[in-house]
Image 1: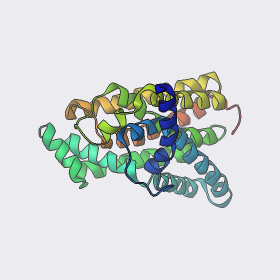
Image 2: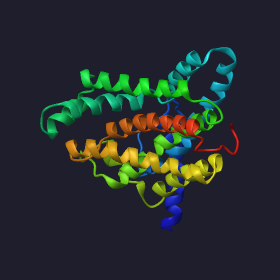
Image 3: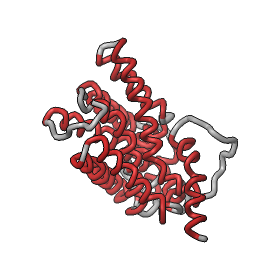
Image 4: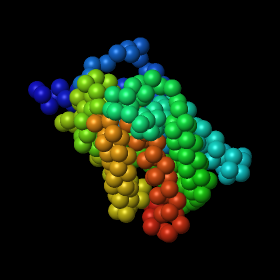
Length: 265
């Protein structure tokens, strides 16, 4: 019975993942049970694949109309809009909190206030510039695979962070996500990215989720060291930074011939 209940709640959590990670609203309900909300983590990579698919379609259209610089700028703008700017807010708040010369409580207070300071602005500019430069440099045959997989890999990085780090607050997103990460959400999340990376890029593509994993753990570890745990802002920061790192990885892979796409070249 418990297994059936877990599967049922996991399926219920699918639209929650879409509503949380994108501006789309599929239902009128806006308050969710912590357990079910946490289980939505299992669908984060699938939402990332949906975003990546939309980026891929948009890139095909823009490629026929504009030079690569304009097209890449619009792709980046679309990537921000498809997530409602949620993760960039996490980048800014996390940077401001970590830059503060104070104790844990003061850092968390700055992050909760939501006012973007100098460190937050600098972090936002750096992350966006890196993503834009990588998009500018990403060419066939890996451009399509990169656009499709990068949002999924970045959103998957939240799962191992939720497993490995304790929440910084007794309530909040960092706490809530952990309530449903087991027994199904974390395995489903990992299975999704490994399958799609392997299908699109062959066995070599399986290294990409590992790169995302390491990058996410490094970023979250730095934040957790100062905050004594992770917050929802940490998740957002990890998604955006891992997104930048994955795009850079695809650029390097295209330059060195590391991956050979099975399709979507």
